[in-house]
Structures are given as C-alpha cells and as structure tokens.
Image (tube, rainbow, N blue to C red; front, side, top):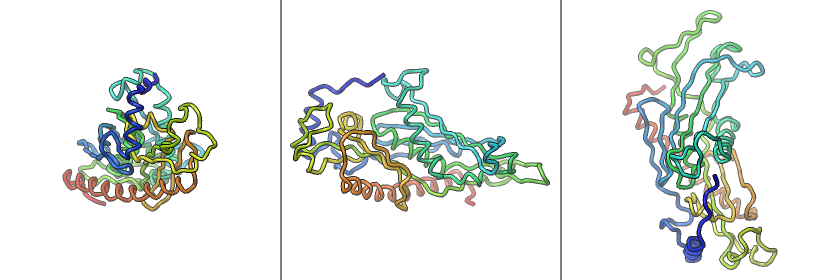
Length: 302
C-alpha cells in the first residue's frame, strides 16, 4: 500500500522552512539523527535506532553442504521483514516492493561487495561450510530505514561469533561448545556503511511542477539543496534521493539513485566526501560499542 501523499499545508510549511535553511527537527542540513545500539543476550543480536526509526538484526549460523559450483565458499542469505508494526504503510503477510528493494540493497552492500570472507566460512571443502542467515525486522519506520538497517547489519556481523570447529581425520568435524572454546569472530574484509541524501531544487526553481524533471532554464545551474539522513516527510518530498554505501577507507560499495533530480559531478563528489567523513565516525563509534558489550559479556577476544 502506497503511503498517503503529504498535504498542501505540509508541503508549503516544509519548503518555507527549507528556504530559511531550517529542518523540521532542528538539525543542520548535513547533520544525522542520534544513534543508539542495544545488544541482546546472544552474540549477533542487535537493535539499532536512528532517531525514531528502529531495526532489529540477528545473525545465526549452521553447517550445510556448499553449492557445487563454489565448494570452498560459505553461504550468506539476508531476509527482511516489514510488518504493520513498523508502519501502517506495510501490509501483513505479503512481500511488498519496499521489502524487496531493502533486501536487494542490503545484499549488494554486504554479500555482493564481499564484506565477509566467504572462504573463511569453509570447514571441509565440498562437504561442510557455514551458512550465515541475517534476519532484519523493522520495528519502526520514521524515514532512513535503509541507513538504519545497514548499520544494524554491520553491528550484528561485527558482534556475531561462530562456534569453533575442528576437523579430525578426513571427514570428522567436531563443533566445540562456547564454554570449552571461545567462539570465533567473522573474517570481514571491510565494514560498509550506507548513508542517504535528499536533494531539492534551488529556491528559485522549487515552485516548478512536482511531476516533471525541471525545465532547461537557468534554475538548474544553481546547486541543489542537500539534506543528510532525511526523515519521513523529508524523504517523501525530496526531488531526488541518493544512497551511498562506502567503507571508512573511502571504498564505494554501492551508489544508488533511482531517477529524480539530475546531479552534477561536483554535487555527487561533495556527497561522497560527506559520506566518507561520516563512515569514519561510524566505524570508530561501532568498534567502541561492540568492544564494550564483549567486555560486559566477558567474551574472550581472539
């Protein structure tokens, strides 16, 4: 079910505030909403909050037979669930377009970008590998669901530890309990973070018809207005939305922009610079939070 369109009063109030360089929640244009992380009793169980948007992520693993064409690589699957608990826009018992798009984006960010070393998940070539299942449940959607879900995924993967295994002889595999041997963290090549930007036409060109892509007049020569981490109404009224997934080392994993306002190369590079700074901040913040929880749970660091 598509969300109802914002009313004329909401649009007028929002763009009037934007013309005065103001956001509805008082943030600066390139300021993100506050973040919170809470860890469950099990390793790999994380709840992430980005403003009023909340996402629950959980990682679990089991031993399976690998795919015949990739006998040395483990398996990774990502499952997303958007229920009416998150927003009345989502229908129960039916996979909507938003749920499919979210799952595909997370798959690109974490699996197809090789964030996890899948060869390190191999136990016995052609016989036994680890199958990691990453489950995402949206608890509240107030805008920025992709950013919140990607951060929850990154935290869950960094927080998760698989049981230690030992191969005896040719085919005998022994799985050691966590009480006997410390569980092993996942081997990750990098940790990508997803950041969203909303773009709006310059103030002089803002009254243009909402359905069109803007005229070819001089209004397009001005720089569009950019908001980092758009909330619900900001995202609905945006003339264009850009999602960047990149690592703290400035490696781009995903660049996603589905139509909307055309962007000049300078505008795109400016967004990349902002996202790179934010990714470095998130990397430091996430590392501290995960280590604090490991110390609290008395998990042996390997």
